[in-house]
Image (cartoon, rainbow, N blue to C red):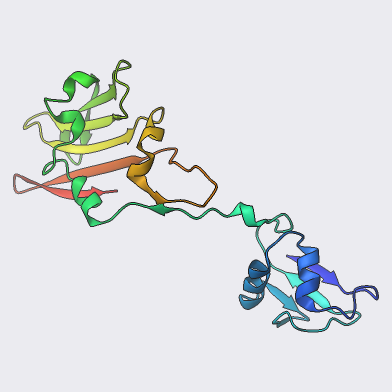
Length: 205
């Protein structure tokens, strides 16, 4: 919280005009939003910004970060592509993961790193990544496979961060004018649970 007291030289001006000077390049919409949410109060009460300041008025600004340097350019608006179909595609049992299809295996390097217990089932831990000779953005990650029936128990993977810029249009629908925007990382986790000798999707994100 920051506190201010109106001096003789500051008295007589409108409250919102004073705040715009105090917060420097903060947009008017931001200042009025702060007033509406009572993050800025005048003499301990909610204010509209139209008030005429008087000598000795007390102003309190409640904020967890410095706000005097907020600028219009600090905010970028983007629209991401997502939805129900995206979630359904993450079910690797119904829609086989790219890194597990026979057609794509030649593009990857696989390495078994451990055998662990996952959800009371023994599982092979297999790490994978795309070959350096492949210039398309593919996946890297880890998958847990049941040692008995070879079912997928768990998978965590991400799109190769070195090549993800090539998939900008896959994830971003629109972005702020004048800015070139793309994701820095896209990561997924999917898990399955065995119930009565059958596997069901447990979680995906």
